[in-house]
Image 1 (spheres, rainbow, N blue to C red):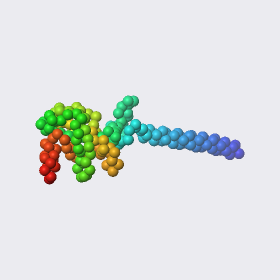
Image 2 (image 1 turned 90 degrees about the horizontal axis):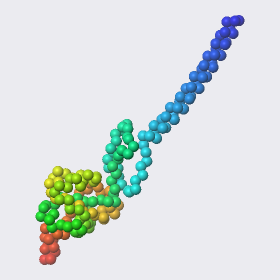
Image 3 (image 1 turned 120 degrees about the horizontal axis):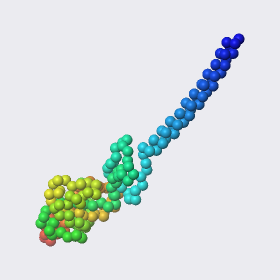
Length: 187
């Protein structure tokens, strides 16, 4: 009889221990769920930008720690598209800021009006530091001209036309003079 009471008491103690362990497991499960939520919230974030644009480059790798103030992504402002052209020295010497130009994207028949906004010269590589698409080595061997073409950003079918290529026609260039000659004589 004594032995039965001891076993009953031991069984009761084990039942209490089992309930405590189940309670701790439930508490750990809640902590794990809370930690998963916290980690998931930290793995992504909503970024608000003041301009419509695209994510151009992600500067932080997955799983890497970011410091306060560190650049995380590069955004492209699709409202401020510029066209850069590499031109010969003779054409460059005839251009001035404010000169009118025409621009046509390759594969598109529309012609957009533009304006020369910067004459960068032959050592213009530093001017490209903040542009989404940098120059090719061949482009840097020529004289750099920057043109704004407001009509590009206003074309919804083009989307964000960053990286597209085309042809710039300068009104003071030899091709424009040839076109005026042909037009004058009815060709």
